[in-house]
Length: 225
Image (cartoon, rainbow, N blue to C red; front, side, top):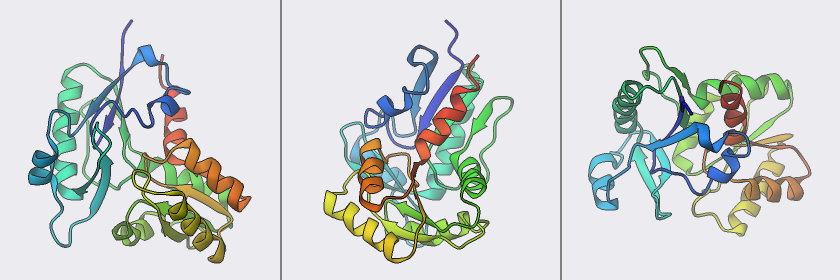
């Protein structure tokens, strides 16, 4: 069977933490997986991708489960090399498993699905005037997230809870913060958030909670022929 779609995480593949969730929408035998950090040790990752002061910070996961903090510019450069290699291998659809903003990624002919280009306009169309609460993994991401969600009709509010490190108390604190700020809908805006995080917050707050990874997985599934 021809495998034409590949997922590309900024961490290590396969993403065992979210793979079951993605495969609810994507056929396992028609999807391959790749990671920017595949084959690297934690020490090598820190040497090659640690964020410098002032750089945007991205967060991902090693195959062993550790959270890693990565430099946005270095990740973008590395992703372009990975994308080039995946195209050479014959993949015609590349699903990026990261909700960070990337301005320069490109392909020769393959379709590149970038969540940061897909999710904000989709959420805007869904929520209209309602206030959106955005949950992000680390506080450093709030400033760039404000720019990412600038086109919402109502300015969003933010809370922090890492999908890789968060205890239930962190989710409770994030949920209470969004509630106090008047959120009508919550977006868990990192690929690492899981169904359990959504279910917990939805039950706690009694408002819709959207998972970024599910939104892009459903779209990608429509492109598999």
